[in-house]
Image (cartoon, rainbow, N blue to C red; front, side, top):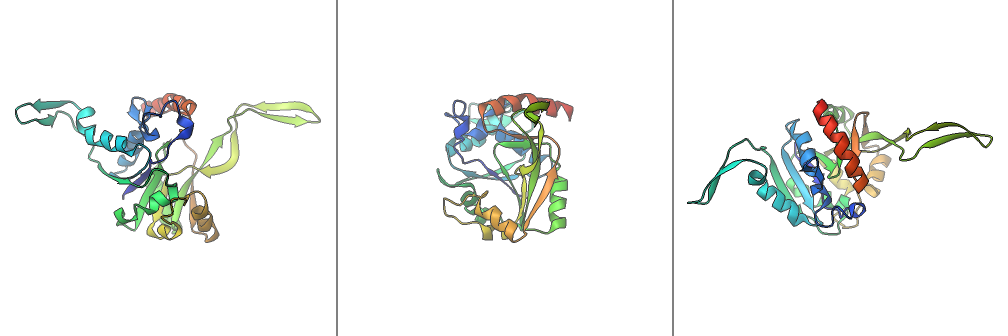
Length: 251
């Protein structure tokens, strides 16, 4: 099953760390965020990735063009300028598609439609990580039989919460888990999903397309209660470096 990873945005809230590189290439434990995402999918044998590119997309292309020699030991024959890898590399297929500098998420997905020849594909954001069981996610999607399944997660409040009675604080909870479900990415989509998208650069996935799917009762929600990280700011990246490293060691 092919995987679309949205990695064309400018990452404005990451400024200071990503002015020279796109957010998907920001380093998490020494590797780009997108590498960690691809590793997760490849653990479930999903190894063909479609990357709708935008902001500094040339750097993402360069990263994958250089990936075999940059991230592996190799032996170089200077006579014919050929090299041989000395350790195994990832058997990934990566399709890079330029989808415009200012194109919104919905339009980026629509613009890679021709690269998706199967009835079902996976979709996620280039700045989100989770310890999600993708096999269970796909099984849930098939059981529900809807056009799209998204992963719903509970998010911690970034603030402490006070309980107040008659002007007196009676309880305080530090960064509680909110009793709401938010879009955690990690979608499973049927081709019917493309009927809800347009190639208009202003088509935002999280706006009209999702709203119309809900009206048509074509959006299923898989609830994930495990680890989920959204890396939007330098502080998020700092926290993710601590949390993700511990999660990987614990597997």
